[in-house]
Length: 270
Image (cartoon, rainbow, N blue to C red):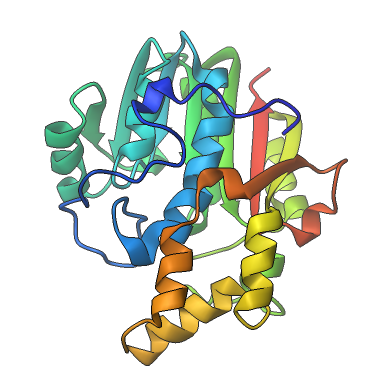
């Protein structure tokens, strides 16, 4: 984005600091968990979007629809007036209630959000839409619970680079992945005005690690996971050292959005 990351105070730690202890939630492959060296690349790739968009939640009533481990909802709670979290996973809800008390965590179906009409100013939905079976119904629910002029902040893997050459997601937890045009259509058809589309890209430090690890540090990590073998020390050290600042968040006018790793949309309820 053109403006830099927000002050890291909301997260109560620097953006590149590593969590003090790993989460108690099990590592399933469906959610990103902080505090684990082998997960750090994915954690930082998700964290950068929270950090860059947290200012859009400042002083507002925020719903995070699908909060996973809860670290992002807690980060936003540092600047928002109120953060409500809804997740279908009862274990995740219990975890957030115990670990992040400033988040109002509730169990619920994202296709039938347990909130009144026009009750929040911002809906945050990061790395979730690709897991949902009825994406259009969820977008309709976001429109319903938002106040006029409210924001829907959404991120999702870019299908073009995440599952290249196929409409069938390589991740077994994904139901339908989207490219930028498809995400735009989903939001506009759902009644939203698209304010901006951004992409997450590797910055210079990660591009150097791509070159070091055979062209792609992502592929290097996936290969080790599939091999079910100990990680090479240099790869593990490089992954553990990644920070949110190593990723660039750029508008579609700044770089080809189809080359992005993740898509980030800012949409407005009329």
